Image 1 (cartoon, rainbow, N blue to C red):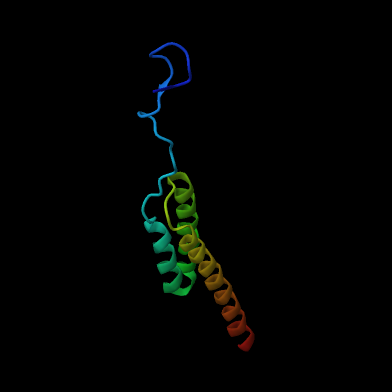
Image 2: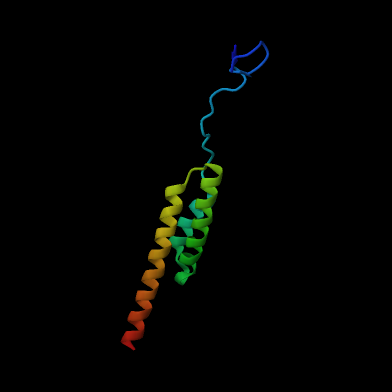
Amino acid sequence: MTVGGGEEGEGLDARRFPPTTPVEHGLNGRALLSVVLALSWLFGLGSVAAIVVGSVAQAQIRRHNQRGRRLAGVGIALGWTGIGLTVVSLLIVLALR
C-alpha cells in the first residue's frame, strides 16, 4: 500500500510511517527542585534560586515535551511569594527600630 499515488514504488509506505503523536517524556527534575528550593527559603536565597531553576525548567519542558510545567510554575510562584514576604518582613523590622 503506497500513499501519494504514481507508479509502483513511488510515494510513502503507510506501514513504515505511522501517524505521529507527541511523545511525553518523564518529569523534569528541575521543576521539582524549584519547589523544594522555594519551600526551603534560606532567607530569600532559596526563593531566588527557585525562580531561576523554575524558569530553566519551563524552557526545558517546552523544548523536550516533558512533564512538570505546573510544578515549575508553582516553584516560581512560591519563589516570588518568598521574596515578597522577605521584603515585607525586612520593612517591618526596620520600621520597628
